[in-house]
Length: 308
Picture 1 (cartoon, rainbow, N blue to C red):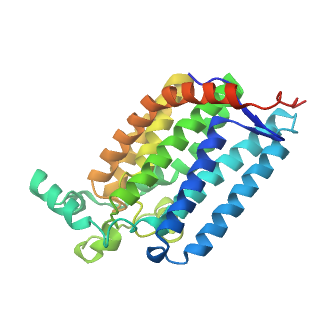
Picture 2 (picture 1 turned 180 degrees about the horizontal axis):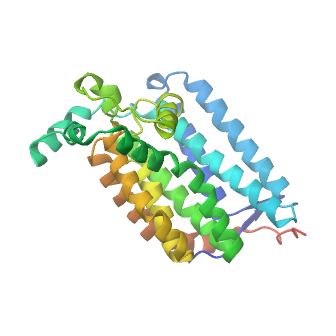
């Protein structure tokens, strides 16, 4: 269970989520420096990471002065959500620091051995505009669900519970980022795009899903599936804090799992590992919170300033 322990260092008041984001930025920066010859424009990545870290620290000074509940919630949600989005993009250049190429062939061989067929190809027999539209809806609606569930938790239960949600999401994202480096997989649409013969035709949400593929995704970022991992966290937190939302989003989350390989964003292996990654994050979060509480209690250098 999340607590409200904060680390106060000088003028900065850090919560566990802030520490996780800043530590990940530092880790990515260190990797870019150590493996600079394998990281395209490593110096630019380092500068971006430092800049983002500075912006996050500045936001801590700004947001703690906000007393209006809605304004405070909006600012906090924006900073954390955009930070997670940045980390997802920042790990792109680090994916091949340990391997000389993509490992898709191993995934394709594994799934062929396990199932006797390629799941993303097998799914073609079910493709229709209506089903594709629903799958793309499930995939795209994940984006607004991210802050909406945050708002539900915050306004029904409070900031501490919202931070528990943020921390679990952040830990899941970081574990996914580590997975991208340990097992870099390009994804079906980048590694074997020519094997598909049935187009993914649909309507509005299909169009939005393809926009996401084109502008927000990149080669890699596949194992674990961050979509499946984060959606699992949302599902668990909805069950924990707002059962009506849990029941509403259950068919969406289950469809999202399928959409990841139906729409060829991922291999079938990716969302399965994504769900397992979310489980690990949920189990680790309370243990890491205990460590954070002890660290924050021992290292805080001055009382927390009032936010009112």
